[in-house]
Length: 487
Image (tube, rainbow, N blue to C red; front, side, top):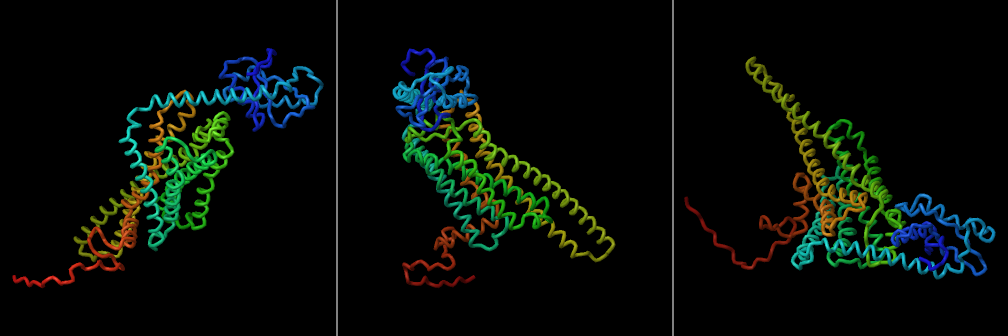
């Protein structure tokens, strides 16, 4: 606040990033100090010249009741430029050039101190609500082990998926294009998002600077959203394969699959790199605070970004997955009824043919058995998709519920340890997908075994040498005695 005797001149804020930022800074400072009078904003761009008079109009006092500092604040803050070419102090314009340098510097320092004090008090409150056992050495070691296991499982499991599809021609089908692309996204989640988060969880601080903070947040949002969108595309692919099997080759063509993959890799960029690197995702106060404190990396979003990003990253894909699986479940029930009816009809026909002593039409029965086998395979695929969907919802729903409610409810607080757990439960989904495929898909299970055998020279399970590997050295070259057993 400026030390002026003018009762109208209450606050002067300086900012290099433009009038909008200066306006919000002034309003925030006014709220913190408790001033309810008019506010004057002075920007340092363009720099004031010694021979250039500066006239600034007053910002109405009603701006102090604007929560976001938007509304008419930005507009009225720019009215000062309109007075530059007017007469000396015409109307409500006040010449204040002589007080700009000292007052702007003092106001900027007061703003930074007040914002740092507010953040420090919030951090202190959060630390006070953190349980003491969370800082115990045993818990820290346990947390490190869990984090490392999740990262290794996500990296190695998804690498195994990619290598298995590349090595085995049987797995090179349209559906597995999505599976391989999903594995790439999950692997990058582990490499580019989990690793940075792990460093913060273990050390308790950010060590990579303000630029890398934006890069990490962008990677986190980008690859996590891409992974979720891949799961959505897989549900759509399975829907057409099971519900409309005759039209599936015409609908899911190779070109259409490539287009879907292109979209799931491009669309997340609109939610990550563009708004995060430009600062659109957060509030002006938090943006200034993060840039002036490079040792802190917080992902504090504004309400608009929270609604849009959560909808695109979770709510819409989740709704599509639930709807698709519901339709697949309906089709599976219908096919189950058809199988039951066909079995009953086959039994009745067989009994009738036995009574009438008429030769049985074997070919038709073989065709029927083939149809039943196909239906069973599709039901297994539907079950696998259902398990993937349930795992997705269990892993990501808690995080996005907290993400949305904590942003919309400004007075709601969550302990830091709970936030960390929610993050890593969501990350765990990237490590869970390969496990689901390995356990419930016979083709992938066999491919995983063959791939692991080719990487390991010895079959540890059956204690024998794998095919193509050199035999182990014979410690005892003397052959065992040949014993004849007489019955």
